[in-house]
Figure 1 (tube, helix red, strand yellow):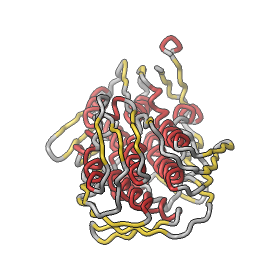
Figure 2 (figure 1 turned 180 degrees about the vertical axis):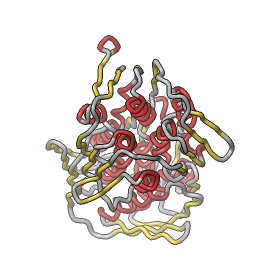
Figure 3 (figure 1 turned 30 degrees about the horizontal axis):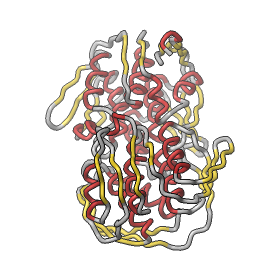
Figure 4 (figure 1 turned 135 degrees about the horizontal axis):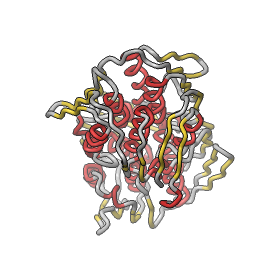
Length: 418
């Protein structure tokens, strides 16, 4: 799907979509733990749908009511599972399958098979599970001998490895393990919060984790709005003004809530009250520094600010971006240069500063965060750019283009390329 955009008079209110980080954890844990739950405010992004299909494949009975769903789990080990392009679903499900002593063949999209998971496989192997790497790059799991003996895992590549082990031991009822060098630790807080809502206690002392379980009664949980999705409109707002975003939890555990503090410190144009977040046009944008080891999903959209900012943006630990849905380090450099930015790369950081603004003729990415960031850059630049492979947006934000239209951006679809 290819589109072109035309910037109109920007202004209006949008609702941030559901946080897929929360949705995926709740859906998967309910299905594998046998604990029923009702979830409200789901956007049904591609990644959320992957987790829902996994739950149904594990024999969960799911009833839908608009943006709500009720999960009544009747767990049965699946012979096969499809994890799509969702790294979260893949890694969390790996630990859950082992904990339930399943023998399951996993498959998914080829791009996901290239992303790292071996560290998690090694840790689960220590606890007794067996794995076979298939020709497609995905694994077959044999958890028949899975135990709750303590293991040690390195979390320097992804915090999802550690979250998977938390799920693993909680399904076992109790256990302990060691997690070293963990990155993106705020995502672990989301996992711990999810488990707490299912009656599971997690205790952490340094690198040591201990898990115990309590009684559980069925709950109704509201999925909060997603800060990483809201970040696209926050960045757009500082260059256009007049954007209001609702459905965000101001006390959220999401690491990408940092976008509010980051942007407000650089512009002073964000106001928050009980009704929403108000973004005004910035008179001046001060230099912005982002640590990609802490907030990797913010790096693409924050880099857009550098394209239009005299003082620029610096992104540290950009190496963390090379193991995401795409090599986002390369994607960011290419995108920013295509819009005319001056880009400097050294061993410590990427620096992006405003150059001579250009209007690239064509940009495409398979990566949802890269293509949304590029579209926002195109709106700000007022470019006449054709954007390709926009269907990837559905991975996290199905309403992205509709929300752009709501605030005054005209979108033209190339019907010949459907």
